[in-house]
Image 1 (cartoon, rainbow, N blue to C red):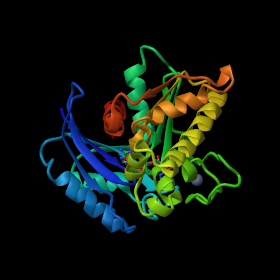
Image 2 (image 1 turned 180 degrees about the vertical axis):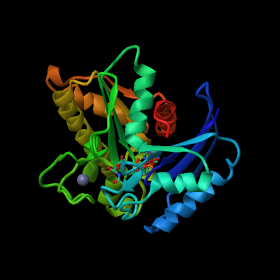
Image 3 (image 1 turned 90 degrees about the horizontal axis):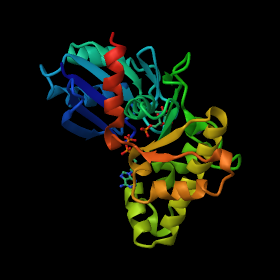
Length: 291
Ligand code: ADP
Ligand code: BMX
Ligand code: ZN
């Protein structure tokens, strides 16, 4: 049996087939539509799933946003248009004619990474530093989704009461400082208009502003990790997302965390499934939570 896995992020939509041996194949990717309209997302999803016709028996979707009872609502409308109450599960079932399971992208990635580490750990927290900052929490071998599917939205924990306004409406969220979108928004002068991939490349070649932006992001993630450790006593942190997986980023977070008191120390791993953690997590979740 093949599962068609789909990952909806603020920057890209990815899809792949995942078989019973958990091998990923036929991976494709398109840009997330810039247009905020629900029809634009539906059209992009139609384009994404078209090539997989007849090749899968079920669909598993990991998506940015609060995914509650099959419905997507953006917490930060800057990241995925102002999608409010988008019928994600019903739309994907209509487009594919297959049963579909949906959950938040970082919750899905946390599940994949926990499954990989489960012989070693029962308490795992996943953090994605990507378009936004997302999270997924596994406590005692169980993924916390919460009564309203909001659990793990750690990008919206406050990092700085005097920080920038976050798209969610709060002030100084971790996401408003550390995310790929926030890094690009804070760039000025010679870095104005560049995206975070380009800014990090400049940091590697010695640009001081680019290095500061990277450090500021890593600092916010380091403080977030110390807060998570205090709240959950998580046994390890898994870092993912294109910013979190960028060269040198995790090492910066680790170096800063090493300066914190001993009780706040926790190992930080790079996501085993790298950029496919959301796809794999949705597929693994669908094995036990099929419609
Ligand atoms: P999504 O948020 O759609 O899941 P990503 O995890 O790829 O997608 O995150 C997108 C963000 O990561 C963008 O801000 C992009 O500029 C940034 N990014 C992509 N590649 C890199 C890289 N190599 N280094 C730093 N930032 C990157
Ligand atoms: C935002 C929020 C989370 C998501 C996180 C990472 C929206 C649309 N999304 O905090 O649900 O998990 O971004 O998302 O409000 P990504 O697009 O960076 O992967
Ligand atoms: Zn916020």
